[in-house]
Length: 342
Image 1 (tube, rainbow, N blue to C red):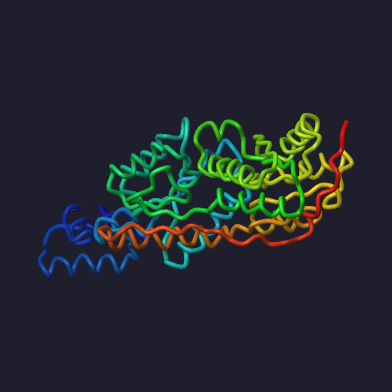
Image 2: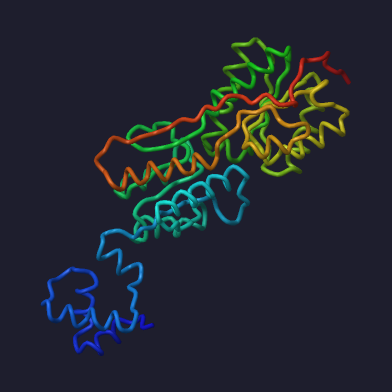
């Protein structure tokens, strides 16, 4: 198989530019010449590369998925979003170009935006004030976000109602008689940087504890089991009256479980845990976690659907979808018991 248009040109007795014009359609070529070139292409089994197809069709048939930096690890929810995007794109006969962003990876993001490599972009892990969103708005490249900024008007997005869901978790715990409830959030660095889910979860938690008249403790936690263990050790030492936790940090759940076991807190008999998580994380908790189950792969697929709408009809009104799943009652929450004292 020949992959060089120079060889095609030599065999057809024409210039390279003439072969390029036939492949891209940028300039007219006489019918006889076009047929001669096409005969050579068919004979040698030449397949134009993606760039040539993009020039000819005005499409790359590729979408960009901008993910957190590869130097960190992706959480289970983030991996679910990626899987949902990739599978939905494959069903639409699209390729996915993964690109990290943040810190030293900004050049990768700029290549996605400026390089005409993709027909549109899906952007993950959105901050309330996000320079990447501003950059994409200015570029004119179709894009959709998984998450949303503080002012998401005029853009297409899909998101989880973290504020409403954490508030619902607090309400569930308050209904069970818990008066001292902690929010185990994402890392302090993410929340301080304006990470949307963490900040919205905090606002929902603060509102809910005020409305229900209970005491709330808001703590940040890194995205590992070890971080979860250390976080709950410190939480119980500083706030021994806490009898329940609501969390959106699924990666910390195994450590939360270990810390509660070591402290002699039995779930759900004298301590309750609930939160917002992907179903497999909820089922793997011991006992299974009462949680608002995030349909992570559906969210990724919905982002692809919205992006295809933006690509096909750029002048259409932006679309969005906010997911607010019900709390699935499992075995990790129960009536409050008298809080322990040190």
